[in-house]
Amino acid sequence: MVFSEYITHHPVQEEDENEMAEVGKPIKDLPVFGDRVFPQTKSLPYVSKAELERVKSVYYYLFDNQDVTYKQFYGMLEKEPKHKEVLKRYPNPSFEETLEELMEQGPKRFAEAINAYTETKLDKQR
Image (tube, rainbow, N blue to C red; front, side):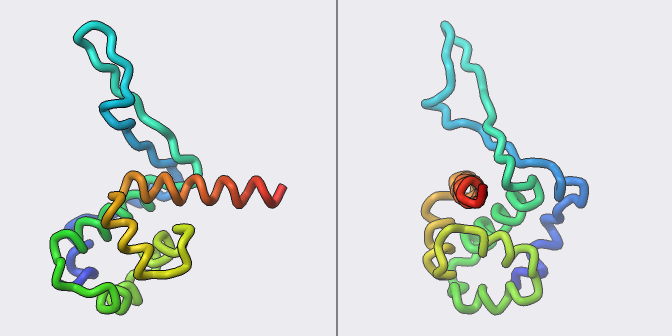
């Protein structure tokens, strides 16, 4: 299955384009009182919910289709500019290394890295 077909089964909601993404903290970092665990989320002001969903789509597609090379996938992204754009925001100029890091770190940490990089870049501009 090509990527453009895959994402038709995982559509991004238009209203998520302007809402910041939130990710849950790892279980080991959650506060525990007695036998109760209190889940917490972390806001990513420089990554939208829609962008996080696009990162997840790329991750799950590549996970499910391990026979697809990164070069083949790059060709598939020509038809999906919004997915390509969010991958370009990652702080590594190499497309192949960016995808390797996504597959190693997972979508949550990948989005956190984009958020941190964007925040640092904006701070330097001030």
